[in-house]
Structure formats: structure tokens, C-alpha cells
Image (cartoon, rainbow, N blue to C red; front, side, top):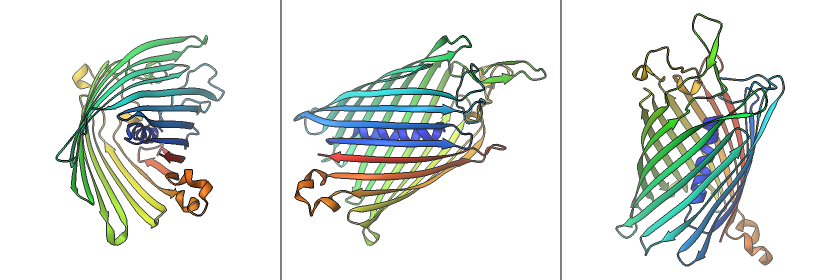
Length: 366
């Protein structure tokens, strides 16, 4: 479920970074084959205050429901307190900031992120710099982010025990316009995480005994990734292909490959059909460089060797299809509504985890 939700995080991040005035209302539901579920509503705003200054805001509220028995396969966290009953927790997040144009070719943004739930709190500051070259045909973007998380554990008496986690992230994004119908993008990411990097709720059996201990991970993690993406519009079929590849590696011995394929097809000038597919594979974590083999645990399925697939489709309608014959509906001329369904599944035996995502959104551009 975590990987499915990351896709939605990327969607909202793209909305927040959009260089246009718009309002987006979204809602989505994720459910998996272990009866975990997440229901979310979100609101995003990008509004120009004056000629070169834009306010950015994203608000999200969600509710996570975890079944009575802890499920270490999905990574869903729940306390042992009231373990025989369904566990629910609410989470809220806000992302707010400003974007400022510095001349015709330079833009800077600064944002603050905060999220809160009963046993987890996160805060982040994000800064980015975007520079256009060659008459805006080539763009360089730099992004830096610092995050501090308070990782909590709800104890049997109802109190919460907290531990800290820090994340430093730096990203480089390059965009090249190859032709009026082709765009090439690429980039690199580097992440340093420090602090409590394991799940305080996940228990691990000590080999050869009946005893369990709390999952143990190293308190330092360096992660790296490079990626490329090409978008190609094909006039004969009135559609565009988007193909993306990402390679990841870290100092925990893990490597992964991700390939994304998307096809945007105009059914009519106001309707777009978007089938999409995502393949992912990764190697198993190896903590030998951090100490003896018995020191750290890799029972979390996200640290195992496995492959996964995500397939689905979206349908987008531009509401000008309905407003053109109704002058009083002119406010819909730059608006659209979309719906998305995505099915995720992996080959990790014996559970073969799977999840379904359904999303709807309404966008007003002005």
C-alpha cells in the first residue's frame, strides 16, 4: 500500500509545483487484499497574488484503517493495544509556500510541509530554483528538502513514545525541448536519512528462540537514483506516449528498476483516455556492511527481493464540452474532471500482495 500511495504523493506534488493559476479537488480510496484501506480528500491551490508572485497550497486529510491482526506483509503499522479490534487513525497534512519569478527565465519557490497523526508527526522545508536557457527550450531545476519526523509508538497504556528521524534530499531535473512534439527530461536524486528507520510496531523473532524483539535497522541510510523520461506526440493517432525509467541504489545493498508507460489518447477534442502501466523490481537488502548478520533485520517486505506491477487507466473530460452552449457556464471553460483506477500486485510469495486505487479529481484553471 505504501508504494501505491507514493504515486498519489507524486500527483499532488506536481499540482503544487504547477506554474499556472488553478484549483484542484481530489479524492481517492486505496484498499488491499489484507483489508487495509486509506480514504483521502485533498485540495490544491496555485494562485498568482501579483504579476510575478504565486501562492501554493495543498491540504490533505485521510483516514487509515488496519484490520484487527497486525499484517507485517503490507507494512501497515498498528499498536498491540486493542489488537483484537479494528485500528483507525486520521492524518492531516498541509503544504504551503510562495513562488517568485526573478526576471523572464528564473523562478524560485519556498514551501513548508506539516503532517500530523496520533503516532507520527512530520515537518519539512523545501526550496527550489528553476532556470530557463536557449529561449526556454532547456530548463534546469534544483530542489532541496529537509524533513524532521517524530516517529511514535502507541504503548499499551495509551501513551506515545517518540523517536526522531531526519531526511536530507537534493534533486536535479533537466528538461530539453527536442521538437514541438517531443520533450526529454532527466534527473538525479540523493537522499540521506538518519534516526529511527525501522517500524516501532513490527516484531521480529530471534532465530532459534520463541522470543521477539522490535525490528532493527541501521540508523543511517544513503539513497541515490537517476531517471529519464520522454514524451512524444504522434499526430496521426492524435495521442502522446510518455515513457520513464528510474534506476535506484543505496548503501543497504538494494537496487531497483522502475519502468512507467503512459499513453494519452484524444477520443474527441474534449475527452482523453489514458491507459498506463508500471513495472518495478528490487534486490534484497544486505546489512553486512553495518555489522554482524544478526544485528539488523530485513523482514519488511519492502526490503525483500520482489517484482511488482501496476496497471490502470484514467479518463479526463474538459468541461468546455458542456459550457460552450451555455453562456452562464463560462466558468467551466478551463476546467476538467478526471477519474483513475489502478491495480497493484507483486510476486512476493506466499502473500502476493495486491491493492486497488480509485481516484477522482476536479480541476479549475484560470
